[in-house]
Image: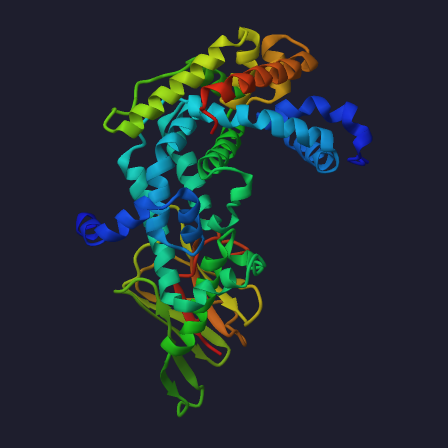
Length: 242
Length: 202
């Protein structure tokens, strides 16, 4: 296939300007970038022309963004930041450790600090998530664990009895437009596993098909309809069921 | 409520205002929302203007700008000052997002948006010196683009602002792909030559 060596310069040299302008198709772009990594001459040409391309966006006639754009963006940012704050000092740890970024793909592309916050939130459940009731006397052994919920007025708990499990909800806000809540099971040091428990109800009981087995945590995130294989947003409910 | 909050945080905000973009990005990487908001205040206008120029539709431009800024917030740690200014980095992300959005839409629709040319229906009001400066900067760079031979400025605009690939442009103009690529290079070289003496290096 493509060697990406310097000998390819004749073949790729013409792609410097189209690449800088974003005018290559994705397969061409990937081939060019492999070549670029190996070709000093192309890198020099890129460096020489880049300032021209970087000036282009400034030629766009100034248009005022609508004020609610800022509000929409800041709502998401602030809810992320609150999660961070809740996580406290631990949030800074990955920064302090330098550039090595923990692999937390399940949170999507989040900054190390945010990933750490989400992680710490889950850990914090160990403190915040207390056992509400352990009615071991009822032969079946029903167990109810309170969950940490990111909405102040809302309450959630996980109830397990035998092999069955359910999430009990009160006063949950509706999921964001076009989203449903999805329940996840997580074990320490592993990615969350999706369940088929999807819900939009605000109060009531949601069964978790198949129970929660030996999951250490039960999490809830807002996901596109039909659910996701990996969480695409931060958990809004977390219960420590270990 | 937002007003109260702003008032309370007045001194924090004036501290943030005094920080350079690069210093703010270090705070953004740690998840500081107010530092991010300051970055948005400084570059949201240029970002939205670019998105609007590329998309030709206000609602698509809003989606693109929102996606771009949230990805900036969530990947704040990835900014590397060795690779250029924060503004260049932000605008590069907006550009990529807008190209992705444009390539998802039908070519025919895009051609229409791009042929409308520069629409200034939603021009920013010149409330501040910063906006006036931006307006002047935009017209300086547009002026430079206009000094290029038409055939060169056309391929650059179709590629950079229209999000078209070299082969789409070649087809549109009825010119060979090699010619289109050559015009892109010549145009960029000429533009590069004009930038340095004018002191508008980004």
